[in-house]
Image (cartoon, rainbow, N blue to C red; front, side, top):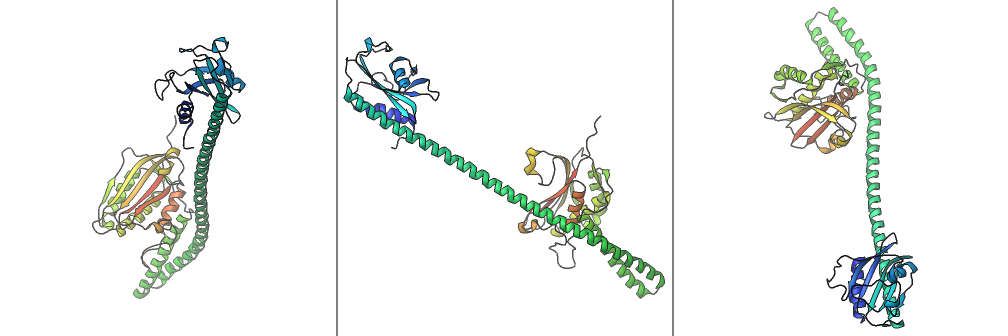
Length: 419
């Protein structure tokens, strides 16, 4: 019962079963799947002096010789005198009598057990009953091995099916989460757009009346009060512009630009504002992109200020550019909402405190901020995401607590002109 495979079974039967019954030799043939040939699979006795190894195993077609006849008819045979039998195929050591019984498993010929003897008429009913019993037990074990193999394959198929089902379930949940996020962003965007337009109308009236009051009130105190009101209205107008950017309803004036040149100019203008230098790693032969220059400057300013605020005084801020080609094969290395194609990736990296994993999914939500009251509107990152998506790209963030953050902006490259 502990024999693990067909090969071990045949050798065990030949050597440890038939070999202990007083037979001179034993050869077990195994049938092929096509049921056309028998091949020596195990042997015992003088015909197999090499232990568990058959040199040049004999192949016998079904129907040829006594062994082939037994495989074809599926009936056992005893031959009293081989020299008088027309089906006998002479061996290197001629025998005079032979007994041959089939191995039948699952309605198919699994093989044949064959034994020969140098004496005429050596085999009788007793030997036939014994060898038939051995053949029946061997066939039963073959059935068990076959069922074990089928069970193993069924188990492996179930494991594969379970793995596929788990993967599909995870993919479905991920798609549902993305759909929910997209619907949420769309709903918030529409709300923000409607609110921004309505509130902008109110700010227009307020700003216009402030300008009229400035002309009518020359007093110093009144001018200071009006200036405060004017500053507040301007800040409100900027909030409206940021909300419209998030809602992807900003009127962008797209221009073909060199991101390297824009980064260099931005860093030169903001050295004093940032109170520290910026490390620039700019790729050569950068692809041109189409973007609104003013929106680009606002995004750079928002991200660099966030990076500076997240770092200590000795922290390093780095801006890099790189040409990247997004293919389906490399999809796991790119944001899921980015379509395949040519992009220029602009990355802003800080060495700050990083962002906690549970906050990463919220940082682009409008009005979400980790700053204290009065220090931030929570619209900076929302504005960046809205502009990037409206421009045909996207933004991704990689962050670890205490190790800083990197914001990757993907700008679609200008298509190569065809001649």
